[in-house]
Image (cartoon, rainbow, N blue to C red):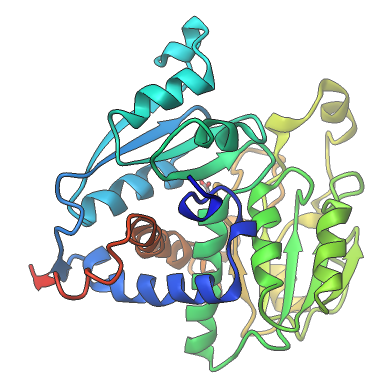
Length: 330
Ligand code: CP
C-alpha cells in the first residue's frame, strides 16, 4: 500500500490535498452535528488501537467512524493487548488487517505506526507516535484556524502565529508547523524553555519555504500583531530522570493566561491548544483564567476534530464524493 493511502505523516500531504480535506470537513459539519445522517460506511469496521493515553483522539476517531455509519473495535493500553505477551507489531498488524477496514493507532515509540502500516493492506492513520507526529491533530488545527480566520475576516497570508511550550517533544506542533508551511507566507514565532526547542530540521524546512521564523526562550515581548497563540503542554512523560530534575519548577514565563493575552496580545488573538492542558499544581501551559474568554478557541478546536476525522476516513476509504449524495435529515 502506498503512503498516499495511509495517513502516517503530514509529509504525504500537499496544499491541494489539505484544501480538499478542509472542503470535505466542511461538508461533514451537518452530520457531525447530527442535523443530517449518512450510512456511507455501513458495514465497515474501524480498529482503534491506543497503546498510549488518549481522550480526544481515541473517542473522536470512534465517533467520526460511527457518524459515517461504520462500527468500531478497540483496544486500549498494552496490558489488554497480546503485545503484553510479546506479540510483534508485524503480527498484530497482519491479524488486525483481517478484522478491520481501517486502523487508527497510537503508540509511544516514534516510527512504530509506520512499521505497523508496512505490514497491513488497510489504511492506517497515525494517532500519535511518541514525539513523532500527530497528523490528524494538525489537520483539525488548520481547519480551526481557517474557520476562526473566516469568522474574523482574516486570511493565512501574512499571519503571525506563535507556537509555545514543549516544541521538542510535542508531536502536534511537529505536524502543524509543516502543514502551516504550505500556506502563507507566515511569520512564525517559536517560544520554548531552553532545551525544549523545535527540532532544527523543521525550522530549516519552514525557513526554506519562505516563512520568517524567530526563536525565543521567553514570552515577555510585544505580540500585539499576533493572530494565533498555540500553547502546548510540557511532555514530562517523555523526560529522562535527569531532565525531570532540570525542568523542575519551570518558570511561569511560558504560561498563556489572561495577563499575557490582555497585556501583550490583541482582542483578535485566538488561543489554541491541542489539549490536554495540565491542570496539576505547578503546570504552566494554559491557564483556566481564560475559560469563558471568546478568544479561547480550544473547545471549538476539539469540536472540529469530528468533521475533520470524518473527512480523513471518507477520503482514505474513497467515499468522500458519495457523502453529500447519501445525506438525509435526521
Ligand atoms: N490532542 C490529543 O491528542 O488529545 P488526547 O491525548 O486526549 O488524544
